[in-house]
Each structure stands twice: as C-alpha cells, then as structure tokens.
Image: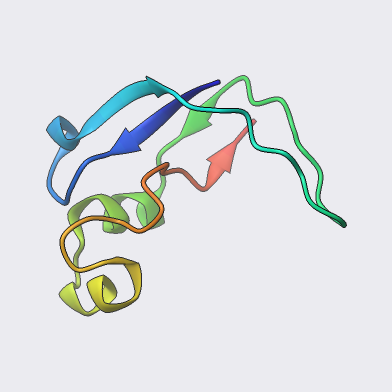
Length: 73
C-alpha cells in the first residue's frame, strides 16, 4: 500500500509517499479501503511537534508511528 510517511518534525518537506506492507487486522478490527485523505489540525500538530510537550508521548526526535493521518474517505 502507499502511505504518507513522516521522517522527523518540521514542515511538508519531512513527508514522503512510500510503499508499506498492508496491515493485517486483528481481532475486533477492520481494514478499510482509503481513496482520499485530508490533513486536519491534529495532523498538523503531529507534523510540527508543537506544542513540544506532545513529543513526550509521540517520540522525542521522530514519531513512533511514522504513518500520519487521522481523516480519510
């Protein structure tokens, strides 16, 4: 699958589109086909790492979960 991956905190220059393995849903989960994504305010905070206190939970230098995005269609 293609995914938008973040390589560090900053602006859009930290993003790239990469091939990633398709996830296998676990028990009680579903896999959906995504045709479009949209950045929202939460995604923008993850991209910049601001406020900096978020980095304690997300990862100090890079995100623990590099595939970003919260909204999809």
